[in-house]
Length: 189
Image: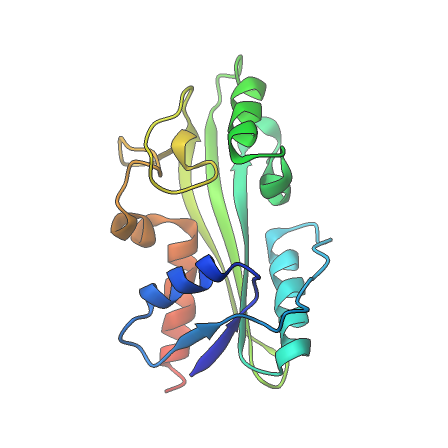
Protein backbone atom coordinates (compact mmCIF):
# COMPACT_ATOMS: atom_id res chain seq x y z
CA UNK A 1 0.00 0.00 0.00
CA UNK A 2 1.41 3.40 -1.00
CA UNK A 3 0.66 6.33 1.28
CA UNK A 4 1.55 9.92 0.49
CA UNK A 5 3.25 11.54 3.48
CA UNK A 6 2.13 15.17 3.52
CA UNK A 7 5.58 16.73 3.81
CA UNK A 8 8.24 18.13 1.53
CA UNK A 9 10.95 16.66 3.78
CA UNK A 10 12.46 13.58 2.09
CA UNK A 11 14.35 12.77 5.33
CA UNK A 12 11.00 12.39 7.15
CA UNK A 13 9.78 9.98 4.45
CA UNK A 14 12.97 7.93 4.74
CA UNK A 15 12.67 7.88 8.54
CA UNK A 16 9.05 6.73 8.56
CA UNK A 17 9.74 4.05 5.92
CA UNK A 18 12.34 2.56 8.29
CA UNK A 19 9.65 2.35 10.97
CA UNK A 20 7.30 0.37 8.73
CA UNK A 21 9.92 -1.99 7.33
CA UNK A 22 8.44 -5.45 6.90
CA UNK A 23 4.89 -4.11 6.55
CA UNK A 24 3.17 -3.81 3.19
CA UNK A 25 3.33 0.00 3.37
CA UNK A 26 5.50 2.49 1.52
CA UNK A 27 5.41 6.21 2.21
CA UNK A 28 6.13 8.58 -0.68
CA UNK A 29 6.45 12.35 -1.11
CA UNK A 30 3.51 14.34 -2.48
CA UNK A 31 3.82 16.07 -5.88
CA UNK A 32 6.34 18.93 -6.05
CA UNK A 33 3.73 21.69 -5.80
CA UNK A 34 2.73 20.63 -2.26
CA UNK A 35 2.76 23.87 -0.26
CA UNK A 36 -0.14 24.06 2.22
CA UNK A 37 -0.94 27.20 4.20
CA UNK A 38 -0.91 26.05 7.82
CA UNK A 39 -3.28 28.58 9.32
CA UNK A 40 -5.07 26.29 11.77
CA UNK A 41 -5.27 27.09 15.47
CA UNK A 42 -4.48 23.55 16.66
CA UNK A 43 -2.16 20.69 15.70
CA UNK A 44 -5.24 18.75 14.57
CA UNK A 45 -6.38 21.56 12.25
CA UNK A 46 -2.92 21.96 10.69
CA UNK A 47 -2.59 18.20 10.21
CA UNK A 48 -5.94 18.14 8.42
CA UNK A 49 -4.95 21.13 6.23
CA UNK A 50 -1.76 19.32 5.13
CA UNK A 51 -3.61 16.04 4.55
CA UNK A 52 -6.31 17.66 2.40
CA UNK A 53 -3.74 19.57 0.33
CA UNK A 54 -1.70 16.40 -0.36
CA UNK A 55 -4.90 14.50 -1.20
CA UNK A 56 -5.98 17.16 -3.74
CA UNK A 57 -2.64 16.69 -5.50
CA UNK A 58 -2.46 12.88 -5.31
CA UNK A 59 -6.00 11.43 -4.86
CA UNK A 60 -4.32 8.69 -2.84
CA UNK A 61 -4.07 7.55 0.78
CA UNK A 62 -2.44 10.44 2.66
CA UNK A 63 -0.93 10.71 6.12
CA UNK A 64 -0.19 14.12 7.61
CA UNK A 65 1.12 15.19 10.98
CA UNK A 66 1.61 18.39 12.87
CA UNK A 67 3.52 18.50 16.09
CA UNK A 68 5.21 20.71 18.61
CA UNK A 69 6.12 21.48 22.19
CA UNK A 70 3.55 22.85 24.64
CA UNK A 71 4.82 24.37 27.90
CA UNK A 72 2.29 24.93 30.68
CA UNK A 73 3.90 28.00 32.25
CA UNK A 74 4.11 29.67 28.81
CA UNK A 75 0.36 29.18 28.23
CA UNK A 76 1.03 26.32 25.80
CA UNK A 77 3.73 28.11 23.79
CA UNK A 78 5.51 27.54 21.52
CA UNK A 79 2.66 25.16 20.53
CA UNK A 80 1.69 25.28 16.86
CA UNK A 81 4.45 27.85 16.35
CA UNK A 82 7.18 25.45 17.58
CA UNK A 83 9.01 25.32 14.24
CA UNK A 84 8.83 29.11 13.84
CA UNK A 85 9.51 30.23 17.43
CA UNK A 86 12.88 31.63 16.32
CA UNK A 87 15.08 31.49 13.21
CA UNK A 88 17.21 28.43 14.04
CA UNK A 89 16.83 25.29 16.18
CA UNK A 90 19.38 26.63 18.69
CA UNK A 91 17.68 30.03 18.80
CA UNK A 92 14.35 28.30 19.55
CA UNK A 93 15.90 26.41 22.47
CA UNK A 94 17.58 29.60 23.72
CA UNK A 95 14.28 31.51 23.56
CA UNK A 96 12.46 28.84 25.59
CA UNK A 97 15.23 28.70 28.21
CA UNK A 98 15.27 32.51 28.49
CA UNK A 99 11.47 32.76 28.81
CA UNK A 100 11.48 30.06 31.50
CA UNK A 101 14.50 31.31 33.45
CA UNK A 102 12.53 32.42 36.54
CA UNK A 103 9.58 30.03 36.24
CA UNK A 104 9.10 27.18 38.71
CA UNK A 105 6.48 25.18 36.79
CA UNK A 106 8.43 23.44 34.05
CA UNK A 107 5.87 20.82 32.95
CA UNK A 108 5.51 20.38 29.21
CA UNK A 109 4.47 17.91 26.57
CA UNK A 110 5.19 17.14 22.97
CA UNK A 111 2.02 16.66 20.88
CA UNK A 112 1.64 15.10 17.45
CA UNK A 113 -1.66 15.11 15.55
CA UNK A 114 -1.86 12.60 12.68
CA UNK A 115 -4.59 12.55 10.06
CA UNK A 116 -5.10 9.71 7.56
CA UNK A 117 -7.23 10.42 4.49
CA UNK A 118 -8.47 7.67 2.18
CA UNK A 119 -8.45 7.81 -1.65
CA UNK A 120 -12.04 9.17 -1.57
CA UNK A 121 -10.82 12.23 0.34
CA UNK A 122 -12.45 11.27 3.64
CA UNK A 123 -10.73 11.32 7.02
CA UNK A 124 -10.29 7.63 7.75
CA UNK A 125 -8.46 8.00 11.07
CA UNK A 126 -6.92 10.65 13.29
CA UNK A 127 -5.02 10.53 16.55
CA UNK A 128 -3.21 12.87 18.93
CA UNK A 129 -0.04 11.37 20.42
CA UNK A 130 1.32 12.97 23.58
CA UNK A 131 4.62 12.60 25.45
CA UNK A 132 4.69 14.18 28.92
CA UNK A 133 7.80 15.74 30.40
CA UNK A 134 9.41 18.91 31.67
CA UNK A 135 11.87 21.54 30.50
CA UNK A 136 15.34 21.39 32.05
CA UNK A 137 17.62 24.40 32.45
CA UNK A 138 20.43 23.33 30.12
CA UNK A 139 20.80 21.11 27.08
CA UNK A 140 21.65 17.41 27.38
CA UNK A 141 22.16 14.84 24.64
CA UNK A 142 23.05 14.84 20.96
CA UNK A 143 20.33 12.68 19.38
CA UNK A 144 17.09 13.93 17.93
CA UNK A 145 16.36 17.47 16.84
CA UNK A 146 14.41 20.58 17.77
CA UNK A 147 13.64 20.89 21.47
CA UNK A 148 14.77 17.32 22.29
CA UNK A 149 17.89 18.40 24.29
CA UNK A 150 15.82 20.38 26.85
CA UNK A 151 12.82 18.02 27.13
CA UNK A 152 13.15 15.62 30.07
CA UNK A 153 10.83 12.65 29.48
CA UNK A 154 8.53 11.74 32.39
CA UNK A 155 9.58 8.49 34.02
CA UNK A 156 13.11 8.62 32.59
CA UNK A 157 16.08 10.59 33.79
CA UNK A 158 16.90 11.37 30.18
CA UNK A 159 16.07 14.05 27.69
CA UNK A 160 14.56 13.10 24.34
CA UNK A 161 18.04 13.82 22.90
CA UNK A 162 19.64 11.23 25.21
CA UNK A 163 17.42 8.24 24.41
CA UNK A 164 18.15 5.86 21.54
CA UNK A 165 16.27 6.18 18.26
CA UNK A 166 14.52 2.88 19.02
CA UNK A 167 13.38 4.11 22.45
CA UNK A 168 12.30 7.47 21.01
CA UNK A 169 10.10 5.70 18.46
CA UNK A 170 8.31 3.92 21.32
CA UNK A 171 7.83 6.82 23.74
CA UNK A 172 7.60 9.92 21.56
CA UNK A 173 4.43 11.75 20.63
CA UNK A 174 5.06 10.92 16.95
CA UNK A 175 5.84 7.28 17.68
CA UNK A 176 2.62 6.88 19.70
CA UNK A 177 0.51 8.50 16.98
CA UNK A 178 2.11 6.44 14.20
CA UNK A 179 1.54 3.23 16.19
CA UNK A 180 -2.20 3.99 16.34
CA UNK A 181 -2.32 4.81 12.60
CA UNK A 182 -0.55 1.52 11.77
CA UNK A 183 -2.95 -0.40 14.04
CA UNK A 184 -5.83 1.15 12.09
CA UNK A 185 -4.24 0.31 8.72
CA UNK A 186 -3.75 -3.29 9.85
CA UNK A 187 -7.55 -3.61 10.23
CA UNK A 188 -7.94 -2.83 6.51
CA UNK A 189 -5.80 -5.71 5.29
